[in-house]
Image (cartoon, rainbow, N blue to C red):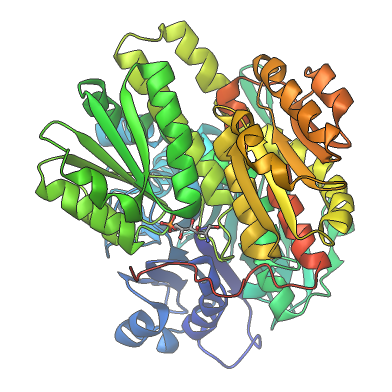
Length: 619
Ligand code: AGP
């Protein structure tokens, strides 16, 4: 997800076309990943390293910088989706060392780049960008200066990196090779005739070859036009060993059509994005401490916070408002952004207004932020898209790092929003001395476990969700009930069911259900109960009993220690018992899968629900 990488190493007779054009064509096929800048580096027959890069779209940049006419035999290309450093010519990849001999493209986040950069600046290296990536070529340069070969220097560099990465690197001083490494970002080798490839996605080289090797985390190596060398990094105590990997047996032939390849084999983008949640959460959380720190300092001194959002983003604001109140003793209210004008008059200087929007372009949220700013409030954007309208107009911006979301139904952006905003609320509570550092640390740790929990949930719930969807696909109505933090999770589950499976799904506070909604319940009426913690079980148990007494079909998303509630369920998604902040982030996953499979069983296209657009820019 996120940035796109391609590397092509060739020998004579590979094709007649200039390498720059082949790289550009491959980048075009990676365009769907979303990007703001593009660039390439090519080693020419004359022994030059040509680098062309710029902010902008591929066709325009390529035309302006003449990609199509750059010849050479070995090269790398990149589409960048900004994370560290705004979209700009300088921040576009490839990045080089001081001597302009080593060029690197990267997808992911180097978490410890600041420390590495300080060290390198101390050694005299000059940096040309704000990116985390640029430390890599400088580290390679630094190790080479100590007498190591390019490959040894590359491996030593990898040993120092913390975070997520898919990397491709070329070096003028070892010109026939493309060096690569992978950890938590996809990277695939393509085996061609008189040339080999490395890319973020098979779609980049599917027109040249279908023979691939899918790299796994911890692997690094290099390709030449005829050779693939892969090693696996093993850390033992304080030392690192590199073990050779026999990749011959891992060569497989991809049968995907180009359309399927775009979806990496998933039937729909929505399912692909549901499955990307562990990565999205891991990248968002790995940068969270740094990204929220300035905003948390501001919030720590404020008295009132208003959170604005629409649809799924509104549900993320509801969770956040509860967390600010409970964990930071901070008055906070969540508002549907299109309703914000009814509140804005009551705003005053010193209030903080946070606009949450995955796209950063939703007009209702943008207008709320504008109007709040006019009234003197401090405005903060929380979005997935660097330099989006809301990010530009707000006084401060923080970013989730979920990667582009193509399916209309928001999935990975929701869990990432909840994770980042939870981190922010806890940090604020810590700074306000409401939470002891040790208590806050426990919650951060619980949040950091969510990528793993979600990965496990995906494995365990997918078959169950598909089974339950057989039943749901024949229903016209459903209730989704929860209490406290569980209510916005239930609301999000209901929204997913409504928007892609067209089942009329309503969410209520569980305690409110008997004050009216229960009148509709009859034999077989599906009611989904979201229970986030053992503490909630006691309260919600009676609601389950009330509904069941009227014939409801009770579906539970519940921690495994809520035994009594679970014993009442007709169908359950049993989740690990977590801190409630971590449950609020991860318990929505079975409900996303349920909505997805219900839509598919009804023969609907979950990526393109009727009447909906991905970004709503009209009032
Ligand atoms: C979510 O599945 C929706 N398609 C929709 O409600 C969306 O969350 C809403 O339009 C807000 O979008 P934003 O996060 O880009 O502002």
